[in-house]
Length: 396
Ligand code: NAP
Image 1: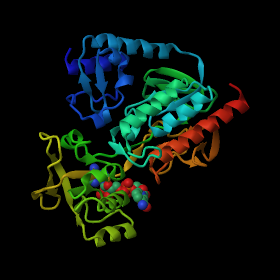
Image 2: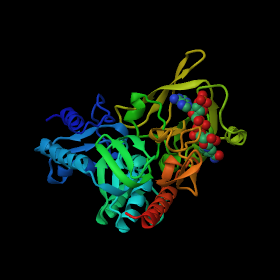
Image 3: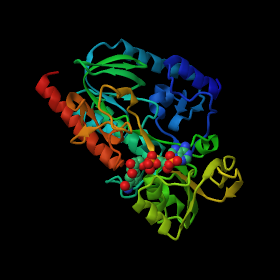
């Protein structure tokens, strides 16, 4: 069975509407490979593997991929037929969601973790993580996530591939309408994260993890002595550019407009830095190096004159903002003007300013300030402890 056929079968069997079909399966390096296990339960038996780092579909044919897929279909079907009311459902399997899963599983809440279109969250598309406490030599992001996943599984957490379409939080138990069916739960932990914005160029997408990154803190270290470009005109872009000067010999900041959105102080810092060059009215049309599987440069365009030019760089960082994955809660949970869940005490949710008992939010879906793996883990822990307390007080 061809790789594409495997991907199409997966879509048909599981109705994964978020699966990026139409894109060619790609080969990726180890740092990009994540979550083989939860896509194919049979992969351990050498049947088939599918990987979806950030929307990519990657396949590896085996002796009987069909059996593997059917195994997972039955697994998900059982999920569909499950009418019991769960104690805790965790939406999202990034750092926050998996930490919540570890804590709630150890409290015997048997959490169900729903994994959506970016299983493992942003860490699963990162390479070496050097600032997570406890790993003196660093750890690969996907490996850290797999470890957390196994840790939660050991205490009774279960996982299901499902996309949350709609929720009903007005009555208890809460009703979740997902691509895998309806789920009832007494508590809900929202850990759906935020997704980095990308330019959307095919060449950019093909080189994520090969010189294209959306996280300077994660990947800047790998560009020591190299020339890089940062796209964006807001505080994130300024912050990334300034941070990257610690490693890069030169940073070119590319912004599509003549006026920057960044705060005055951040802009001034970037402008004053001898190793940062700011170019306005400039957009990236193509990232060069797809054949070589590493960034070789950028094809740029001046938006006023239309003039094209080539910029030699070894890396491209996107600083064009993040989008919280919280749209499905609009009207049921208070969101701020950028769509982040508004929380009290970091994790408590509200509707029209009134607390929603039993619904907690943690990690990047409610954090526009810190956005770190360790802070996501911390709030994931807090959310699980609150869910446990709520169930103790209100009964299971
Ligand atoms: P932002 O303020 O929304 O800026 C995003 C930038 O990316 C804008 O300049 C925008 O261009 C550009 N952009 C968006 N889509 C693009 C595309 N497709 N192609 C090219 N450029 C594109 O986002 P942010 O910088 O992440 O900041 C978000 C919030 O966090 C802000 O409130 C910010 O102050 C805060 N923040 C604070 C700090 C800090 O204080 N240290 C650090 C980071 C973020 P246009 O200007 O043309 O729209």
